Length: 185
Image 1 (cartoon, rainbow, N blue to C red):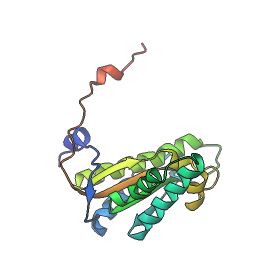
Image 2 (image 1 turned 90 degrees about the vertical axis):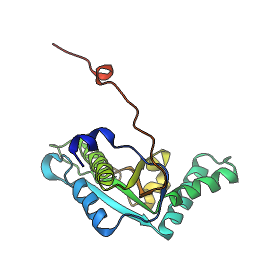
Image 3 (image 1 turned 45 degrees about the vertical axis):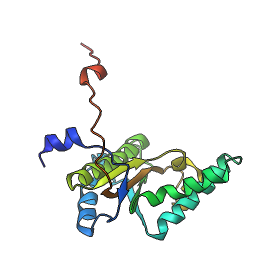
Image 4 (image 1 turned 90 degrees about the horizontal axis):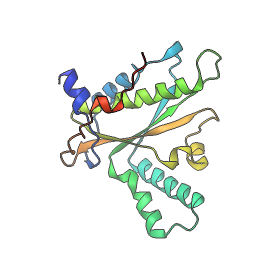
């Protein structure tokens, strides 16, 4: 795949099925993630693979999280939330492992972890895998943070859902760069 095709055509694929990425495909995803811009070479990230029964455990955790934030949530909604992680054969939680340092701001370390997640999406697309990035309120919820053993400075950057595309993803929305550029001269 040409680099310009990768950069301009990558898109999220929300309908995933088995098989999950192979060990070789995952190795490339992680190697791409480790190439994220990293001021100070702190490697401020860690990854948690969630597969098999772990996806059901994550679903129960998400439902408990929602119930704690919105006690009046219906049982039907809680059941639907608990099924969300089962929509992909593999999920990777991307966590910013932030170090206290005077030289490299916390925000920069979190962005580095975000860049690692971003690189994983591109590596997945380059290998014809389906992938999408989901975050939501779960990433900041104390129950979820505790389950992933996040320290106070850490951030759960997101969940990367991975698998085989079940359908052809929608084409990317065409945006014009000029609509997003301002000039200072």
